[in-house]
Each structure stands twice: as C-alpha cells, then as structure tokens.
Amino acid sequence: MSRFILVRAVLLIACCSPSARLLAQSAAPAAPAAHNAAEQALVALLDEDLQAMKERSPVEASRRGDRRFDTRWPDHSAAARERYLAACRQRLDAANKIDAGALSPSSRVTHALLIYELRLRLDGERFKTWQMPISQQNGPQISLPQVPDNLSFTTDKHREDYAARLEAVPAYLEQTIANMRQGLAEGRTPPRVVMQSVPQQALASAGEQFLKDPASHPMYKPFAGRTDATAERAKRAIAEKVVPAFKSLGEFLRDEYVPKCREGIAAVDLPDGAAFYNFRVRDNTTTQLTADQVHQIGMREVSRIRAEMMQVIARSDFPRKGELSGDDLFRAFVEYLRTDKRFYYSEGEALLDGYRVICKRVDAELPRLFGTLPRLSYGVREMPPMFAAAAPTAYYYSGSLENGVPGWFIANTYRLDQRPRYEMIALSLHEAVPGHHFQYALAQELAREGMHEWRTWVDYTAFGEGWALYTERLGLEMGEDARSASNPDGRGLYTDPYDDFGRLSYEMWRAMRLVVDTGMHALGWSRQRAIDFMLDNSALTQTNIEKEVDRYIAWPGQALGYKIGELRIRDLRSEAEATLQERFDIRSFHDAVLLQGAVPLDVLAMQVREWADGIKRR
Image (cartoon, rainbow, N blue to C red; front, side, top):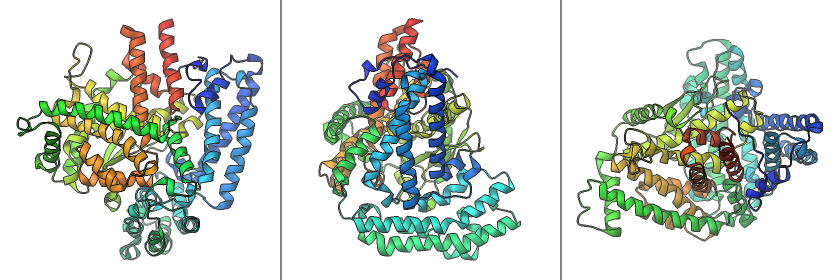
C-alpha cells in the first residue's frame, strides 16, 4: 500500500483552520540526530491516548478486535471523566513539548492531529454533552441490543466475558440516568419534540416475554442453541439484570425525563448555547466557517441542484411535463414520485434484495476507479424493527478483520411506502461501497500497514460523510454509460431519469441540511419551517423529512459535515485534474484521499496537493 509523504510547507493553508496552523508549526525539515527520541516520545503518547480511548469506549474496542475490554461498558462517572480530562491535559502538555522538527514528515502530521484532538476534547468539555446521552437515534437503548450483532463469539472466553457484560448493564444504565438527572437540574436536555419515541425504545428491551423466555431477548443471541453453564448465566442476567434495568430506564424517560425536556429546539437555547453551536460547526466541518456562511453555501447549492433537477424532469416520462412548468411542474413531479406505487416495494425482503443487487453491480465497477480495494467484506441486512420507526433510511456499521465481523449496510424496511426505489442507488453507494465501507475498512487496514492504530480511531464528519456523499456522484462514472471525457453526457448507473433524480434529491438533501440545521439552531427557524423547506425542494417523503429534521434537532451541527466535505473533495479533484491534465489518474486520486485515514479538510487538501506535485515531479 502506497503512502503519501506530506512535506509541503503550510503556506497553502496557513490562513485556514487550527489543524492547518498546527501542521504549519511542524512543517520544518526533520533533524535526524533527534529523530529517535522525538519519534519515541510521540509513539508513547499515541499508545497512551489509544489505550485511554479504548477504556473510554470498551464496546468499540471489542468490536475492533481488542478483546481485553469485553466485560465492560463505558464509564461516564464524574470520577472517570475527571481522570480522563486530567490525562488529556497532561498528554497535550507533553505533545507540545515534542520537537516537531525532529519528526518524520508523516509523524509531524500525526503529531499535529494528536494536538488537534486533545484540544478539541478539552474545548468541548465545557458544554457537558454527557448530560444528554440519549436521543431518538442514539443512546444505550439503541446500541446495547445491537452489540451481539457487531461482535464475534468464537471462544468460551468471549461468551463468559459477554455474560459478565450483561450482568453489568444495570450499573451502566443507572449511571446514564444519574447524568441525565444532572442535565435536568442544569437545564441541559434534548428538545421534547424529538424524545417522544425514546421511552418505548428502552421499554422494548424490557418486555414481560423476556422474563418468561430470556433466550428471546436480542442481547442473548451469542448463546442461541447453547445449554452450558455460561448460557444459563446469561439467561439469569437477562431476566434479573438486563430487563429490569431497561424497565427502569424506560420508566424514568417516560415519567420523569421527557415531560421535563425543553420546549425549544435551538442549540442556542441551551446554557452557553451560542458557543456550543459554534463549536459544533467547527468540530463537524473542520473549518472556521460561521453558521451564517454555512447557511449561504447551502442556499447556493439548493439553487444549483434545483436547476439540474428540472433538466432531469424534462428527460423523464412524467405524463404532465408538457402541460406544466416551473414550480408547478416541480411540485407535481415530486407528488408523483411520492405517491405512485411503481416507485415502492411492497415487501421488506424485496427491498433488501434490491439493495443487494445494486451493491453487487457496483462491486464490478470498483477496480476501474480505485487502486486499493479493502480486504474486508460487507453485507446488507434489515434494521432491527424495534428501532426502525424513529430511525433514518439506512446506516453503516463498520466491521473488523481482527474480530471476524463484516461491514454492514443496515436498511430500514419500516413504512415501505416511504422508501422509494429511486433513492436506492445513491444510498447504496453512500452507505456501502465505495462510501463508508471503503472509508472505514481501508482505515483499519492502515494499522496493518504500519500506521499507528491511533490514526484509525480518530474520525472527522466532514471527511467521512463528505467522502460518502462524493461517492454518490461516482455512480455517474460506473456502468456502460459511464461519464467520461469522450462521453460527458453519460449517466452511468443513473440511466433511468428517476434514479438520477433520486441522486440529485439526495444531494439536495445534504445541501438543505446546511440551510435547515443552521436555520433551526442559530437563525430562529421553527421545526415546521425546516420541514416545509425540505418538502418544497426535494422528492424526499414526508416521513423521511420529519425524521431527518428531528435528527438535526437532536444532533446539532453533525449534518453540516456532509456537503462541506463533499464540496472540498470535488474541488480538490477538479484542481488535480486541471493541474495534471492527461496525467490525472482517478484510481491514484482516490488512493490519495483515502490512504492516510480520516483527516481534517485542510490536511486533506495538503496531502492531495502533495500527491499531485509528486506526479508532476516524476
């Protein structure tokens, strides 16, 4: 696997983000005499910080194949939090003392990222997000029942540790409740409008049927068909520990927490809310853009994509396109998409099979577009029904070669009349290949190739989601009608105008996020105004839009990373194509983007430009 040495002085990006300035400070030539001591000091800090991340996220450590933490849940107690932050301060102080000029070029990047990450954690602590650990799409009521699906259980020790983990569920959920009570006392809660379904999510794991038959509980899966002592221990843990703990959590949410959640939806309504939202914008875009600047970028993108949508409508067989025009035509076309049965499956398994067919078709196209393919396989499976009603259309779970678990594209089969076929190609490219599966699987393999494992644990929304959105457009370059220099009008996989409209609808969806997220959290928009804006500008169904708007309400700023990241990757590709002209190789470009792992956008720009300069020098 190739590597791209980052040696360019940071004059390219000196006026940009803190991550870029950090790299500028470490861009001087390495001093060989001090190389070993500086490198060893950096590796020691990375080892220490990686260990701390695993201890803080033991389930993630288990999922990635480090089974030392298999009996644990996260510890979010005040004592654990203070120990963690104190250690972060010490590591930051030690990292700042390392002579960056004595490091190799690639180590200077890692050193800068370590400082960036530690500062981000410490800057974010003031906002006490640990007091709001649950929403309609995140929290232990969702993650715990799915843990067995994301781990391998191949030894007796794996199952014994998991039984101990089941017995520890009450302590973890009690800790979660205590933190939420503290949030109530300090006025730090999610908006009530997005929390209505959450108590039932927790109570779904606390049904009486699980007391009568613990083996039917989703958390019992690793023991299915077993009758040994560890399986009996797990049954007792389900009946005596897990079910009562989820019942307590559900009743707390239903009777105490949700009724007291705040009425307003804006992040700026929280204590220190304006600073909190600004931090979320910075964190999720890895830029210094303001909320108003992001809003304006979104409005420009909405206008551009809307114009492309009208061109696709003209290519379709929509019966009324000859009698209508402008906004009337758009509204009628979208209503047709939302209501005509030709665009929807009637059975969940047929929907899942449809995704599998698309993914297999994409698989054959990938060697032409990528120089490096991941070794880890992936699959398509149904979203657990108990969470589907409040969940998005799909999501991705990364797997692990070390753990023997594939990546999973998880598709929602709830309300099939809200899951249109014309969105499926774009969604498959985004969630599976070459979107999130390539991004995460290749990042994990970097550790096998010599990059420090710490780099595979850090993640940036703008990079990961920006990449996945970029790959939706790659569908234009796949298939017999692939777009190319000799065939600029090719539609690739999107030869059906309705599929192409679905692609644009998904791109519009991400552009609208820039508008409605900033609108609701910083500019005074209501929930209904956000819903209406999205209904007026896309073919997304009413249910999808409502769930998405509630997601943005519950997760301020996260949705901004998609479009901001995608725009940067597309700009970098256009820049490289103009610079290299006939020497531009798409396979090599994609390797340049992916094969350094997740990085802030300005670091990505530097590494892509260094790659292009290297080709020019050769």
